Length: 309
Image 1 (cartoon, rainbow, N blue to C red):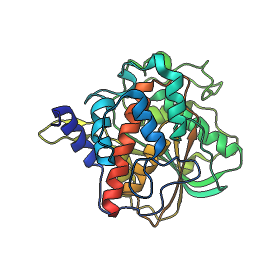
Image 2 (cartoon, rainbow, N blue to C red; image 1 turned 30 degrees about the horizontal axis):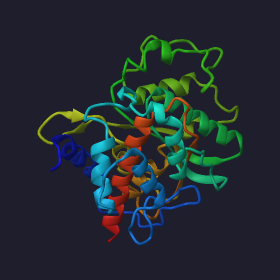
Image 3 (cartoon, helix red, strand yellow; image 1 turned 90 degrees about the vertical axis):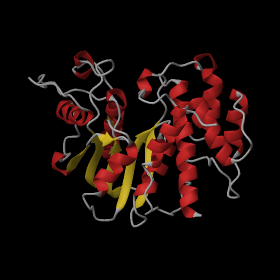
Image 4 (cartoon, rainbow, N blue to C red; image 1 turned 180 degrees about the vertical axis):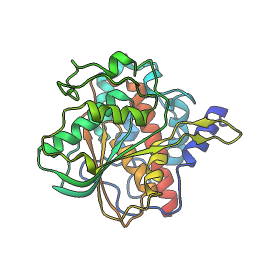
């Protein structure tokens, strides 16, 4: 029988599904498939489940249910708030995650795109993703419009305190030498994005007028209350602006490349061409966070396959 936590998580994840599903091929050269063409789980996924002793019936639906219960973080808990009971098995788990395509960097395959879509995150991942975009720009990759997919998630002072935001010594996203702390500090993730863009050293010829920050509002929850916007919510908020179809370079980071790729494909029409890239996994990444991501990726994979059936 499903727990209340599982049923609530299922409802939240289902809210990301629309019926205009992109039926384009999902798997690229970077991505080890979760599922074989016959609908059965791929060996790297089975190996991970076996290593961690996750019991299942051998079907993808059964694996989805089992991993939601075993790995999904508690409702209302952010990734950075998770404990890491798997820390002592980190090296072995990294090998399994690598076999699933969740560790190594994924690089762009083209030089020009109509859009760059940068997925929002907490400040450390945001800095890394923005820095990666600027690095790609310095390498000659061009995008006509740069869209930052973010929202009204309240700033978390545990990991996004003033010292962290104003750290001019960090080198992930270097700070301009003449940057001055503003009188008003950001209060939401979208405001943090603007803060970092103002603060960061950018390529000399980069035109900031091509940047669009999508500020997705907090989302209602069945029965009352609100929750922070998810990846899918931010994608849908951008689509509501009726962007012209074109090629999209989606900028994530590992281990989220596979999950965010398939989540975007559930909402973005197949008139768009999608390619998702991201830097290698952080050495500070908690294995519990990586497994939570795999559980969400499996759910979205099953959602897409059900919509295509």
